[in-house]
Length: 299
Image (cartoon, rainbow, N blue to C red; front, side, top):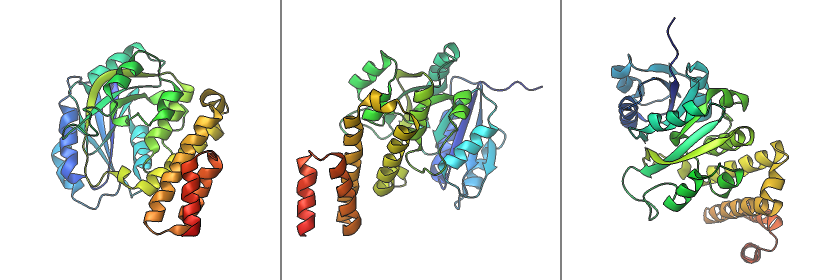
C-alpha cells in the first residue's frame, strides 16, 4: 500500500497557461518533498492542458466544466490524500521554504485548523511596502494567537500563504462555491471560528499582479465581501459580542459606500443611491455618506 503524502498541493486554474508552469516549478523546487500536486482545470479554453503535459508524471490533472475556483478547489481537496492542504493560485509562486516552514509548525500543532505566513510582490514593492502584510503588523501577529478581529479589520489571509488541516477544511464545509473572489476571507472566518489559527512572520509566497487578477472586479469583490460579513454574523452568534455591533456596521457601511461610488461612476444611478442608502442606515452619524446622499438626491 502506497503511503499518503503529508501535504496535498491543490491548484485550481482557468486560462492561466502562460503562468501555471512557473507556479508548478516553484512547488517542485521546494526543500520539503513529501507532497502531491493536484491541478484542477476549471474548463480552460486556452492551451492549459498542453503546457501541463510535460508535468504529467508529477501531477494529478483533473478537468471539469467551468464552475468557478471554489468548486475547483473543493474537487481538488476531495481527491487529496494528505492530511494538510496547500491551496495555490495558478499565477503566483511559492518561496523555496514555503512547505518546510508551514508544515514544520503544523507537524507540532495538529489541533490547529490553519497556519499562514506573509507574501511579497513578485515585481517589487507595492503600496510603499515590500510585503502584503506590513512588517510591523506581521511581527505583532506572530507574537499572539490570531483573533477574529485581526481578520475582520483587514483581509490579511492569502490562502497561497497557508496550510490548512484537511480535517478542519471538511468540518467547516470547504469553500462556498457561490463565491468567486472572497472565498479566502470566507473560509478563513469559518476556520478561525472553529479552530485555532497561527501566523508565522515569514514570506512564503510571491504574488503576481496582472490584468487577469480576479480581485480587479470591484463590484463583485465588494458585493461578495458584504455577503461574507453578513454570513459570519448570521452563522456565529458570538461574533457580534466579539467584534462589537458598531465595528461590524462600520465595515459594512464602508463597503456599501465604495459600492455606491463605483456604481455612480458607471452611471448606475438608481443602484448607486440604494447602496448609499444602506451605508447611511448602517452608519447614520457618518457625515460624508450623508453629504453624498444629499448631493446625489439633487443630481
